[in-house]
Image (cartoon, rainbow, N blue to C red; front, side, top):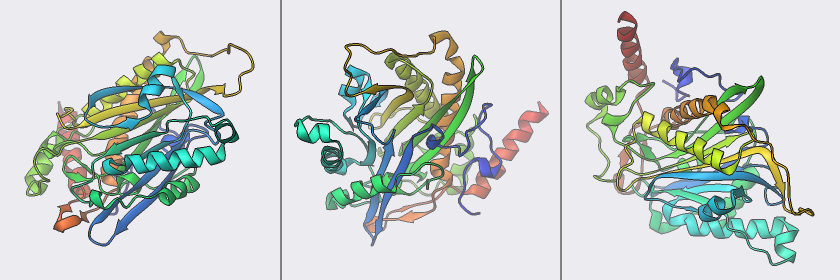
Length: 362
């Protein structure tokens, strides 16, 4: 079966409607770009860049995060949590390339934004990582500055590639080939439509723990595809980026990020010791201009007790994004003959239909 989204298999996650493209770019202004490095026998890596808006340093956004398990890294996260603001693009890559990507983003921003260059201002780019060393020779340091700049140039709204692309090229989830996945949900709060979009770089979990729409399908898949196992104790991580146009405060964004962690758990993560489950969120609902001439600004926010739909929709979108990261990814071989199978879509659909029929009989 051709690689496709989980929804294309007839598997619908949750109850909320998806956005136009069912990905993070359904949040207006958000763009995504990749550079994929899939070369020879040992290079399986890349860069993915999320552009929150076209002038993010000048037009900062409310942001925050939640760390379920911290065996990973997102540079710039301390400042985001301190200020409650996002002022750079968000880049994703492999663990050993986080420094290079940070440096490349710093150079790109200092050239793009005159305020940084002319005032010798400084920025701390937001760069997240996952470990792709099972398939990729991370010590070759193949990710370079030009790849980051090209990913920024490639950033677009609408549909973008998912699966084994960009930062997701060498990633693995629940012992299956995975990588970049995305999904979105629409919610209505006081008769106003809002969007929640999610992008994940998924690289966690064990086959038996995989759940699809609540069903323990990983146990059945393991009976058929379980002859493969990646090396022991290499079960991490995931970077989850949540975007929304819901006008929210930093503490509300953190609360939404916490629900993203529930979505990761719903897909099968138990946040293993060596796994980093890191969730970053931002809202386009308020724009904080860099050149504020007045000492205060006004924000619009949703009252907390109206956010329940957003919490539920976020969990759905995260779960679906993780599944998409697998269903879009095919078999891959890598360094030293390593091999990771793609999720068998025919078997997945068969298992799901059987669980569904059994439930309907109850």
